Image (cartoon, rainbow, N blue to C red; front, top):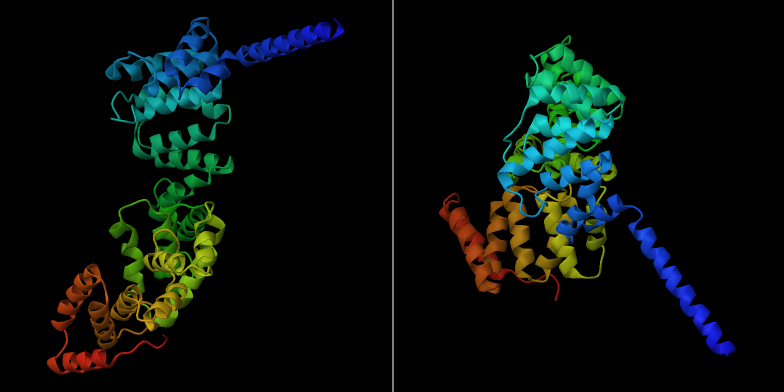
Amino acid sequence: MRYRSASLHLFIGTLMAGLLVSVAASADPIADARRLRNDDPAAAYALIKPLADQGNAEAQAVVAGMYNGGEVPGEKPEEAFDRAIFWMEKAAEQGNPGHQLSLGSWLFEGDLGSHAHADPSRAIPWLEKAAAQGEVGAMYLLGRASDTGKGVPENPAEAARWYRQAIDHGNSGVSELLAALYAAGRGVRQDDVAAFKLYESGARHGSATAAKETARFYWEGRGVPQDQTRSYAWAVVATVLSMEGNEVRQEQRDQLAAKLNLREIREGQDLALGLFRPLDGWGNLQRMEEDLSSQDIRRQYKAAVEFTEGLQVPQNFQKALPVFQKLADVGNPAGLIAMGFMYLGGYGVEPDPVEAYVLYRVARDRGTDEDKREAAGVLAELETTMSPDLIDYARKRSMKWQPKQP
């Protein structure tokens, strides 16, 4: 009987513990609704809507977010944004600066999917309320409003005032916007030194636009002593930071590289690695450098390609060349083509079309069908720029070519 009694008490204790956990889990329906939004939005909405109807500001904000995110079952997409505004306004009216900022930004930008339903003039009072309570995002949007004349009359001086407030409150991303005003003398006294300092600050915080402008100011010696190597380094960094299409991302970097000699390019690329390292929050640079030093030649090759392209990590030919050369020395077609490419463009080595021709021709003779097609295409282009004697010389060299290592 004692055993049964103990078991019964254990069972009751376990049951009560389960009930307590259940009660604790449902003690905060707002938190529960937020957890449910992704997996079961209908259940989340059913849980949170009664609280919103009762006037709970946090619940109203969650409901607004669900409408804005298209998460409310059965809601017409064309009506969802207006319903989001309705509920966020109810939440904002209760004085929370975060809700006021959300409402103001939604009204300022409109539906992010289509930018329809924007009402910037209606957004301004809410943004001002949020800014008065220290919301830095509201300061930024008020600056943009005055800068562009969106919702208020265009007023660059007022824009500069709001941008300064945002920067003082820790929004470094606004630096480039204030810098543009100083560079153009809009609303403030024209001041290249101030513009440069703001652009460089934005660049060191990871802004691609600011990095591009920092590169431009260094190249022109505008607001800072001219330094073309450092200019190129910032252009290399800007290429990685930018989210534009590849051709646009690379344009400034490659244009500047074309005006530098091999030594300056090497110095600039090494400098770019140091500038980028504090910005590399995702560890791309560290991972690629680890791959280069691994024992896996495939990982080495892929990392070398990344350093050559310079889109995921700063472009650095000196890191890529040893890997490509090692592969080429043993007759690997991928290595031969890579080294041919480097000689063709003068990437990390002095341009040498004859050496490029030799390497591509050897790769064509040794590689896969895909290698053959790629190499043949480059050879055909080279033959349009080389003299017959030079082509003949390059062909003879390719016929004598032997791997440097077995």
